[in-house]
Length: 283
Image 1 (cartoon, rainbow, N blue to C red):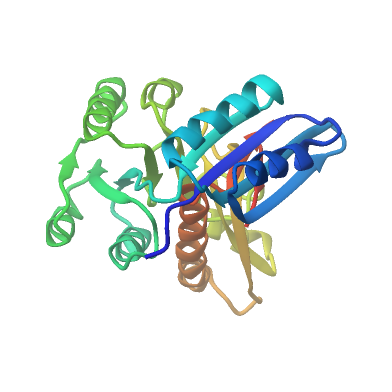
Image 2 (image 1 turned 180 degrees about the vertical axis):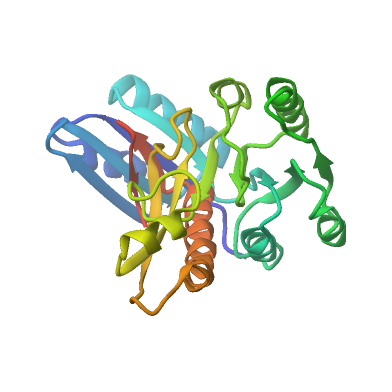
């Protein structure tokens, strides 16, 4: 078994020598860098870096020491994690099940680093399937009249499970600003179109009416603005005039599964930095 590594994500004002100072600090402590990548936004003059290394000494002590270096000496915002971390993940889903099954199987096979802790749904449709996977299922109906109370109950459950990431596997409700503020962790949504095109409901039908030659899927962080959150991953498939709405839906589902899984993987592997409603993804 390979030893755990430290993963650091840095962002802040660009300045000379940042790459050298980070690499030099790790070298002086006899660490072994196994991944390093950086990006400079020339418009905003902001520097971003992901660096991963195996320390020679105590991993917890080095994790804390690097955070102090980044924040106090380099003036950078820093997140410092361990490759051995297994974040707790909760799924929100309605009735549509292809992303639900696909993402659970990827977790169960060990493809995704994390621990599934709950499934929360506004319908009972997938209760039996959730039980078959051995996961807790929470059914909380949501209507216009009870939305605030229902979301408060959802937040309570998600916080009690210790969820560090919520993933919307085609959960067909718009999350309110209050929910997103109080849930206490990031939320990733999969939208069945190539955003910003065809936001909102029935995007495949919108695409058919428009006669597009490409359809897509988009995984993004959820924000209070519908389908406007920072985009993590996207993919497209070619279609023709011969494809009706059912064909677009069928082809789109394959895109949704792979794009959703890719976004969740990048997040759990600590490869994403968010800024100005955009993302830097160190893939």
